[in-house]
Length: 133
Image (cartoon, rainbow, N blue to C red; front, side):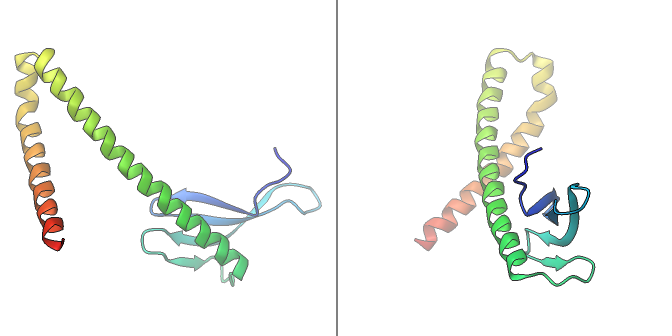
């Protein structure tokens, strides 16, 4: 393992992370991780763990991580949407070129309802944006 370990380790969890301070400066030269906080990236909550007081350095590292994490999650969301567009295109090609009648019967109603719901939301949101401008 590398000798230049980060000072903090963030164990990602749903909507946030557990924050650990990494310590290698001990007698046994073992890596010790001491949990110092629990954070929620959705609402910005930072809760010190075990009655600790977080230092300015702790808070700065946590806030930096939260900003980076939010950016990563936002990028993933957009990437997921572009993948959904690809899947829609692949589904269209499948329905047109390879799908058997019984397969189409199985998925048509669910696809039509999902696409109708998506179209309704997209049209409403587009109209809202146009009205603002």
